[in-house]
Length: 145
Image 1 (cartoon, one colour):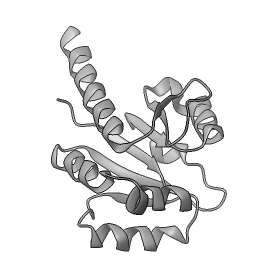
Image 2 (tube, helix red, strand yellow):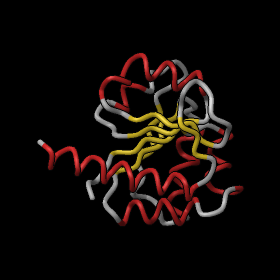
Image 3 (cartoon, one colour):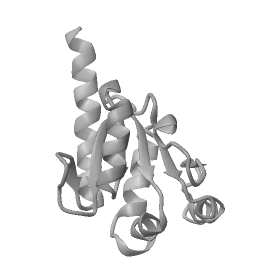
Image 4 (spheres, helix red, strand yellow):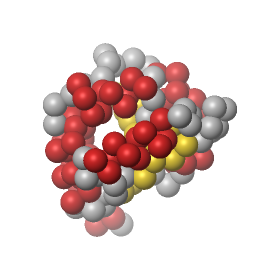
């Protein structure tokens, strides 16, 4: 299994979606970290950055990097060389695809029905399965070369 660089959107909705309302979020994140995957949360909302860092510490998930890009920041700059990015906003995914989509970063929509041609991952178990599949595909690609 290849270790992947994974990015997640972090806004108010996502923050609560991650930690308070959805089953298995913490368990899946801990498992991905234990498998060696690099995880980062990217937010344009600076006010969430310290709150997110403190929450991650409380849940023993401080290995996750939290990056604040500012109100008009460009999330895509933090996703260069990432293998996958998960966001709950189609418009954000479309903007990111236009800049880095051809760079090999897989883009996923989470928590909503599929739109804009993006694969929807409605829960944390599906996110985990997709990461496992993606990491295996990356190994197979390297072996084929």
